[in-house]
Length: 281
Ligand code: PYL
Image 1 (cartoon, rainbow, N blue to C red):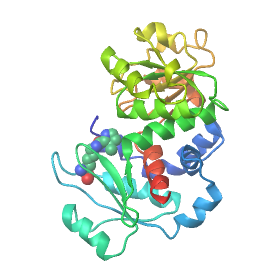
Image 2: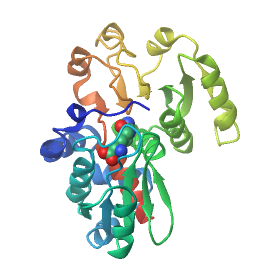
Image 3: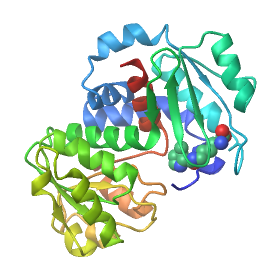
C-alpha cells in the first residue's frame, strides 16, 4: 500500500464541493450517492441516519507516524457527507478510549498497514482497501450506465483490485485480471472462481495488448505509468472509461486531459465515503 503524503491530500478539503459536482457530471450521482450505490442502499434513508451518527477520527502515531492533514481530511470528507465527525483530541489508545467514553458511534484510524472504520456498537469493521475497490467499481458501473455483461479489465490484483473484481462480478460484468506479477493474477482468479461468473475470468498476460482491447478499466496499481498516453488517445480508444483507485494515479496529466469526464480517480474521498456507509449497514 502506497503511503500518502501531505501534498497528496492537502487540497482535498477545499475542493469537496467541486469534486462532488465533477462526480455528478461523470456518474449522475454525488459522492454520497456513489457510496450508497456501492452497497445498494437508498440514499434518502441513509441521509436520515447520517446526521446523528458520530465518528471520531483517531490519529495514530505508530510506525511511520502521523501524516499531517490525514485525520483532518478524513474528518472533512465525513462532515461534507453530513456525519457528526471530529478529529480526536488524543491519538492512539487515548483517542480510542475517549471515543468510547464520549459514546461515539464509530472510530476511523489508520496505521501503516490498515485504514479502518469500526462501529463501536455493532463491532463491524470497514476496511479502506475493500471499500475503495468496491466503490470505484460502483462508480464505473454508473459511468458506463450499467457494467452488466461488459468486459472490464482490472489492472492490479492486490486488495483493492480484488475487491473491485469481486464487485464487478456481482454486477454481472465479465472480468479480466492483469498484474505485473502474473502469479498474483492467477491466485486472484482461483480465489474468485467460486463467485457467480468467476469461472469466466480471463487472465491478460500482456498489459499493453490488454489495454488496447478493453473499453472499461479499473486501474488499481501502485505505479504511476500503468496506462501510457498512446493507449488513451481518442483515435485508439474513443470510448475508454477508467476508474482509478490506484495511488499514485497510473495515468499522466496529459492522459487525464484526454480522458476528462471518462476518468474517475481520487486518493481518499470515495474510499472514506464507502467506509462510512458500510459502518451504517
Ligand atoms: C489510507 C491510505 C490510502 C493509500 N495509502 C494509505 C496510507 O497512506 N496509509 C497510511 C496512513 C497513516 C496515517 C497516520 C495518521 O495520520 O494517523 N498513522
